[in-house]
Amino acid sequence: MHQYKGRLIVHTGSMFSGKTSSLEKDIKRFKIAGYNTVAFKPTLDTRYNKDTITTHDNTMIEALPCPSIETVLEYVAHHDVDVIGIDEVQFLEGELTDILNAVDHILKLKKTVVVAGLDMDFEGNPFAIVKELMPRADYLTKHHAVCTCCGADAWVSHRKSADKSRIVIGAAEEYEPLCRNCYNELIDKETNNSL
Image (cartoon, rainbow, N blue to C red):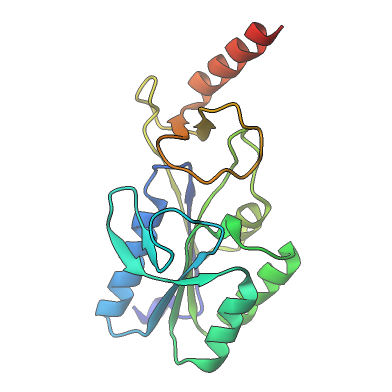
């Protein structure tokens, strides 16, 4: 797996699409291949356990909680590590340019960086960090969940509650994957009902 040294691997898409499962699989494969691996999860992600990255299917890998990219840089500076995984990258605190510069610095050290993150919020607006990492990726996978209304490939994570905050941590009780058509129909219906 030496071809991945100094490479950026990005997994993105809606909730329930398998992004975290793919990150977990990548980290486990690198570990089996003999690489020193570490995984991080933003402290904002309070679902499940703070010391693990847990998929919606309840598989997990150990992870270090990190509030910002500085935690990742500090770890890389003081540990012999080849592969760095970051789940829910859209929740990392800090300036966009600082995060991008840090990822670039880690890649220049010939370390592999694997990230998973939502491409868009519940209103279909891109998360800036994921939007910027996607074209910089050596390997990019756009994952799709299944639309809960029609069974097509999902496009967005629709929030079921009326909370309009951009970040609301949750899972199936809070969100549902919808395709573009079903999402637009639902939003049109909600808009017409509020008039």
